[in-house]
Image 1 (tube, helix red, strand yellow):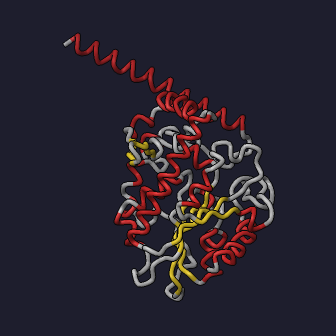
Image 2: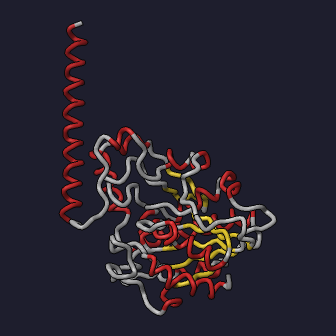
Image 3: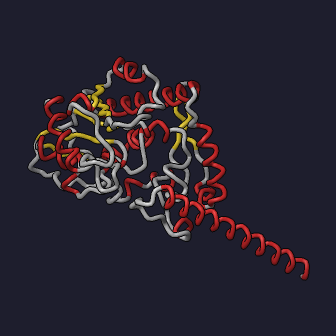
Length: 326
């Protein structure tokens, strides 16, 4: 009995030491973030939140999307009065409308200008792989309008960061989620979902290890860039194939949201977009539509200085509607 008691005491001490170090890692990351970006408007989650609730769009949370009516952002401009065929949107926080009111978002502006219902399936800190995940699930299509009015367009709003997310277990940083980001591996031209138990990512010590792995995977080498290109290309192609099974005549638009940054396209292969064009994608540069790149920390951005502002969408959406004759 005494041996069992001693083992239990040692175990409890080890657990206390582990969580002490884990908490110190959490505090260190919070201090680091505050120091690097003192104007950051996003407050870190409390330490215990990483153990008591799901944070971030991890696989364990994504698999129940159809059961949660509030999973995607609702478009308040959608109405039974909109008789034209609908449009589907994908992307990240830019498309989602982070830091914007419902009537300031891309989806709202597009609905108002086109008199169409616009379904916004973008999620914050997500990307190409999440689009493919949803399109591969039959439950997804139940949310779209009647089959007698199939959507003529799907629009994916792309920013270069989406390539980095393809090979990152953690994005954007370790105090933003408690599970691995949805990832796929390319095996013999087939996409295999990479599954890592989410409970591992509740620990900041373990997340530090995965962060170092991500850093290695995102080195700017030709080999790493080509791997990202191949993975992105297959995710786009497979997404297009899934859509065309349900809507044979749908057109797939990739809207590149061009930002004036020195390293904007650092992860891209120079032939990436030519390859996708040959595969039937419509590639549109926002710069070509509005005559310039968007600027960070300007009227183009919301109060965080990064995400698109209402003024940016007011400038871009009418040009896009004209370009696609929506």
